[in-house]
Length: 153
Image (tube, rainbow, N blue to C red; front, side):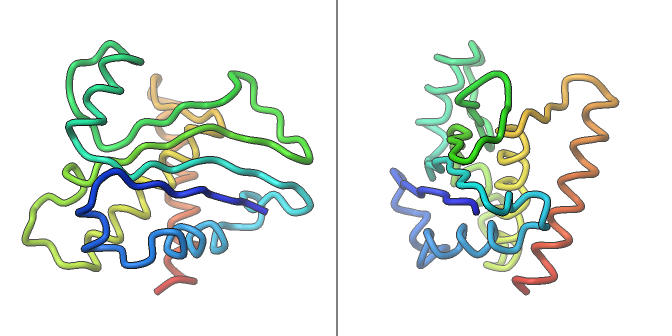
């Protein structure tokens, strides 16, 4: 079972996602079985933020003085899924995902789901530093996204 604790420090998220907790809970519930971790309690936090705040975090933790769409911070370097496991923290920037501003709500939600899955995989130890790792992560992202999309839409 996956539990995501959702926090928001950017008011604009409420315009697009009326019930943020429920939205992300539904995504996790629609994950393929291997990512639901049956008989285990997996948890992580999600901060819905903005470009200004994410830029500060990116500068502080990654020494990159720019905003980005998402940041993921694993709680432990070595991933070992035990009965109770806290994976870490994900931060998503509203401004980054709300481009173009003219996009419809469905497109915005689709972007949010995709980037949320991306961040989740980072918490599980996936990365895209090397080409082979990039393709492995992309395959898993698409696998999870197709599963989620078929159950949510």
